[in-house]
Image: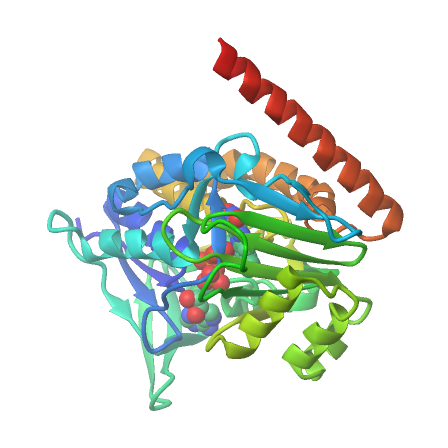
Length: 392
Ligand SMILES: Cc1cc2nc3c(=O)[nH]c(=O)nc-3n(C[C@H](O)[C@H](O)[C@H](O)COP(=O)(O)OP(=O)(O)OC[C@H]3O[C@@H](n4cnc5c(N)ncnc54)[C@H](O)[C@@H]3O)c2cc1C
């Protein structure tokens, strides 16, 4: 029997994971990526145990470079009086997240896509995006555009996987407009890499400055300079995109005149590349329709405050492969099983993200105060646990 063909749209974490999962299930996937080449680098990601297990299941964990400083590294928090206190870093949460940049996960997945000498490489069509998707009897016809030349061609597949991120075009074409599924969190992020650590801190230290409505996070690594996250709350997301981005960030953080914030803002002016975006969650009643399925941010967007988006990008692909292996002749049954396995934990993390967002950036002064007390308490308990473990 001829292997079934699948088109995976998007060469991010979710797309590459899904393509490898499909290959494991005996399918013949091909990836279409809008960009002309593979992206690299990126911001800090804490990869949780479910994500690491999924990397193992996808056969790529041996390629995954992790960058945890010993013991999670030192974390500091800058208080309102400008004093430094022990803080809680992202890596200190339960589950021992693996510290990586997004590009580390994508590089490991890329090794898997290329086959690693044992599997058939998965073809990747760069500079290609779908502009029409029509379900036919027994297949899906996709109109593909070459983004360099504008040339169009039709291809037919047994399955289309939309892994094209938060503002997914596959979702828009097949399920409906963005407004129907994207919830607005009235918050902005800016993420970038530092050339060097904030002066006077250890190379792999992490630092947080969290004030009502805005926060700066410096994420330390064992073997490379930190990355920075600037995040703030806003009533009008559209207006944030209209303004000059760096000038707007300087305005938002203008009253936080301390060396950490100054270093981050100065570095932002010099960085060749930064991510500036609004924060959303995607909520859909179902992630598949006929022979089209969405994965990763396109389907559920567990945003950065949840700290689970990359983890579930990997998991979604690994589980898709598992479900297709379990139902080789019945795509509908495979997609139903896949969604019912994933949905409860996605929904749980979507709910928890609201609470976690207050740890990232408290929305007002009372929450800022409660957050500071909670961090101090957690640091004291952590210190006691460590002392006890050393004494034992
Ligand atoms: C600052 C920040 C910090 C984060 N921290 C964490 C963390 O600590 N832990 C964690 O688990 N997650 C974290 N996340 C979330 C995580 O990075 C994302 O959930 C994950 O990378 C999404 O992967 P994806 O493949 O679904 O989408 P994307 O990464 O958006 O990839 C989509 C791909 O599709 C391509 N594409 C788009 N449109 C088209 C089109 N029309 N045709 C063809 N190709 C197209 C894009 O070019 C891209 O390559 C963080 C996110 C941010 C922004």
